[in-house]
Image (tube, rainbow, N blue to C red):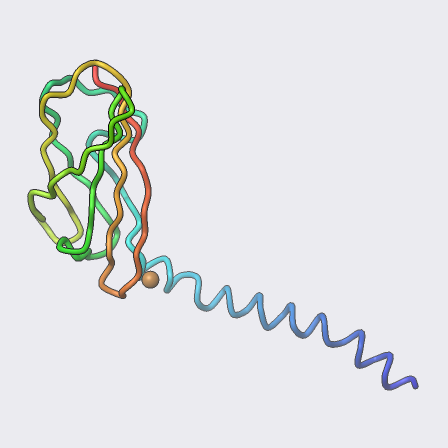
Length: 128
Ligand SMILES: [Cu+2]
């Protein structure tokens, strides 16, 4: 009877420790492996002048340009596909936006990292 009580009390703690150390060990590797946006042009919530806007998205790891997509949500609610122009250096994607009028835009990105995982995010910005 005594033994059973001890076992029940022990297990949740043991599970918690195993989970916590698992996160501690693997979290840095996940962070390195996934493509996370490090910096961008335009910057997040930044303001740029139109009508032509150069886009640069810098990630913490190499990305597969062929399997990455960019879309632009325009002030009128229209969503346009943005052609990825190139990869000026590993982990950096470039594109050119043209004909942008004044207003609020959201550039949505989805990239495939070299570890096979897809990440996505958005860069809201203003054109003045
Ligand atoms: Cu990953």
